[in-house]
Image (cartoon, rainbow, N blue to C red; front, top):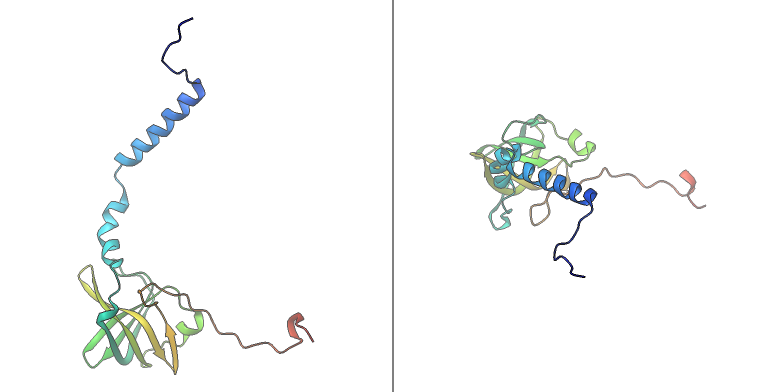
Length: 163
């Protein structure tokens, strides 16, 4: 008996394969909003340049919590220093107690690297000192860190602790 060289495929498998192929082709060919956001994303994801860090000391002029189109997402401080006003990006991961400590007129010291994003200069803050507290905003490579509210230790015996 002679065999054909063609492999027979179950109809359900052929239909599933054709459907997956159609979805892939559609996804590859459809205009996508990410293509328009790519330049901003590339600019912001540029490597953090620790070798060019600066220190800015001054008073908080304004705490900006609302997102401005084209700017990095998260909290910004406008700091009035000796070289003018600097827009310092603090990110979106600060704890509530740190955010509550930021008020216009409050003296701050910020260590970070300047970065131009969409034609505007931002100080990507790595370290913030305010009200005698030093807060790490970014790690040495420039990645945003999460800050958590400090909790005072509970006394032994409370909240189900050992006695």
